Image (cartoon, rainbow, N blue to C red; front, top):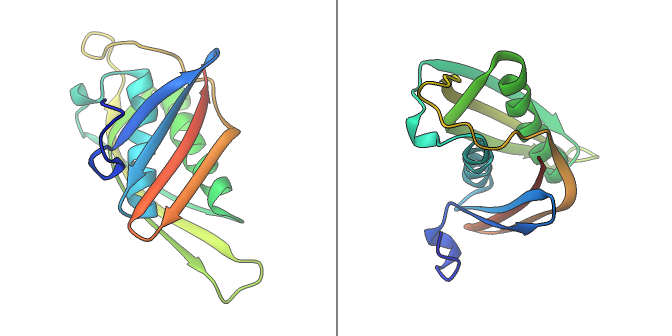
Length: 153
């Protein structure tokens, strides 16, 4: 990815982190940025362009803030990869909050589309051990959202 492009043109970009993988995911909404963060994570694992959409997983999460929601979202997808050998390449994410509640709670409702990893068709890249909170960042300014994530590989 060309790091000189306007962030609105990029879905995600990787950056150098010692012994780990870091990336920034972009979107025109928080849900769209979460979708792109998931695609970036699976790009670390394999070439997502080779993934068929024969398996559908419904995911519902709630968390006390956007950071915990991002961590839980990516960790849930990584759980499906580790437990059921699934890889995903298409996501539909809706995020909402109940701002009238104290404390404010964030909710995620999502669909992930993919298939079981097939070593004959899917390139094996890096093993992602875990999502981390290290250097995690979320900038949510109207229609320009940026998420920064570090994966432990």
